[in-house]
Image 1 (tube, rainbow, N blue to C red):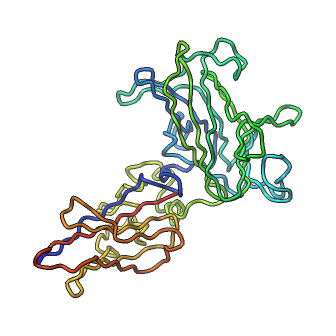
Image 2 (image 1 turned 120 degrees about the vertical axis):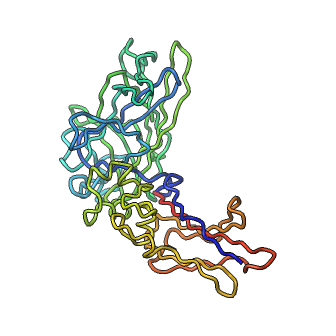
Amino acid sequence: MRLRLSSLTVLAAACLFPVGAHAQLYLDSGHVDLNIGFSAPTSEFGLYAHHTPPEANAPRDEPVDNAAFFVSDIGGKIPSAGGLLPFLGQPGQPVWLIPQNSPPPNVPWVGFGGYGVDGAEGEPAEDLSVFDPLPTLTGHPTTPAVRIRFLRATVPAGADFAVWQTGATGTPTLFFSNRPDTIAPQVFGLRRGQHAHFNWGFSQPGHYRIHLRLEGSIGGVAVPARDFAVDFAVSVLPLYEQWRRASARFSATERAARAIGGPAADPDGDGLPNLLEYALGREPRLADASAGAPVLRLDASTPRLTFTRVADPLLIYAVEGSTDLATWTELWRGTGTDNTAGSVEVVAPAPLSPGDPRSFLRLRVNHVE
């Protein structure tokens, strides 16, 4: 009888936080715009985090799926400000704020931009010049524009989220809100070339995923809309991101480089990607593929897979079994509060036998945000 163990696999893009995929780049300071592009040849919208990395001389456009914004307590937390605005928080409670103007140096200054995106690696350039104007939303009768529509927000239990602008008199103009008792238009228009900033408010710590839809028309005909999600980490970073930043494991430049700091990257070349190194309590810059790796053994002809996990509720550990390497069945799953630090043993559902001499087990690890 032969016993085989498939190669360890990591799925880094299936799900992140309880609602999405793990951000490659956390932006925690500087001027950042959610930049809208549109490719006329493909009739497809794009949404990008338009920012200038510290080591760069020119801005870059990172697909918003790969980015998230971190609002820390230092600079972002406003004590006892809840309830001062009727759509955000409760009286006497703190709120977290990305201000419309003059943000602290350690808070990302997030706005919207309609700059267009230069083509790269054979991709067509993206701009908004082909769209019809939206005078009722933008106040301009001729400049091409698109709609940014708020769909919903996935937030911590009971939390409020809002986007508004403050005029010269201090009166707020609300655009987006997740509170059912608040009336908000939930849409605004952005002109080609326009640059606009807003107040972004959060009433509790945690992860916020803001679901937006980009819409527009060309020659009076609506083009295919496209939905995007924008992630905010408020007050605390996910444990995996804390791990990437701790002990000088990865510099800011390396964290932004998928080939080095990405969850599927393997900078030490030992065959285990970063996310799996983290999930198994290993170091990503130390080539030690055997140390701490899952162990497969037979006990009374029954395969057993043993591995070490870390106490991170945002990890999903899954052990799968197969007899032919084609069809896999999930045998065990651990996530949420079940993820306690220590050793885990998963037993195959049946022992090996002359009629069924092969058994394959594999460990898959995802990070959810």
